[in-house]
Image 1 (spheres, one colour):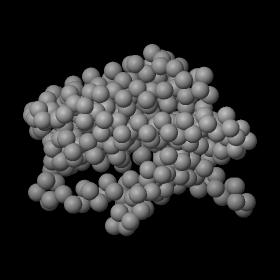
Image 2 (image 1 turned 60 degrees about the vertical axis):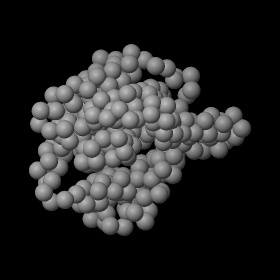
Image 3 (image 1 turned 90 degrees about the vertical axis):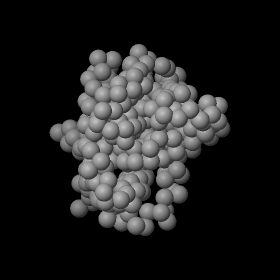
Image 4 (image 1 turned 90 degrees about the horizontal axis):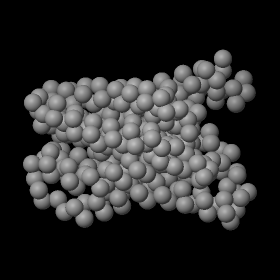
Length: 303
């Protein structure tokens, strides 16, 4: 069997293997977790080298998705508040959280428009950076967040990861078209980088959940279940809305694939720390769906 055929056969199983590896090897993740930012940067650079900047525009779909992201998260919070504040906050964060920085990579693998998703990524993350300092004090019962400082903090963690790879891709296209073309032709590399990043993220999530006390198992389980329900709902309704606007993949990934690393950090920093179980659980739900989607997409390409 040729190496290319072996890679093709193994490809549908690489993401599940990465997730399983993260679960069973979570105790070593702290030693390599620093690599996740570099891996995401590399993925986005490869992906953005394929993007045509002229296609960047804020579409009707982008505005619909960001409206659901903001208004839907507030609605979910108040619906679940009678059950418990930790459950409401954890599930709220799974909807309010911006689209993942790696979402354009998966979108490209699934045949969606990278440019449309990248455009939405910017508005999604900026909306969270601007609105989070206003919303968090209200749902956490505190009013001591500094609007200016909190906005800058969130922006500093999100915007560079989105903007710098895009700027570097544009600079490369201008000063070294040959290098730009070479990187753009290596889109399949993003998949394997993503698998390594997934291994790290899942391992970190498992380590976090394990550290929670045993008497919180019921609440943790409830938050995890609610996280799974909103994850499936966001992928489903995102694809439905995307279908009406001409791109199911962008709709599904834009609404369903979340920046869980940022969400866990925001939960730990500004909300009840237990609420971070929501986005930590979301890691498993969204990547199970992504693995299934990639498997189905690869099967369709073969047929």
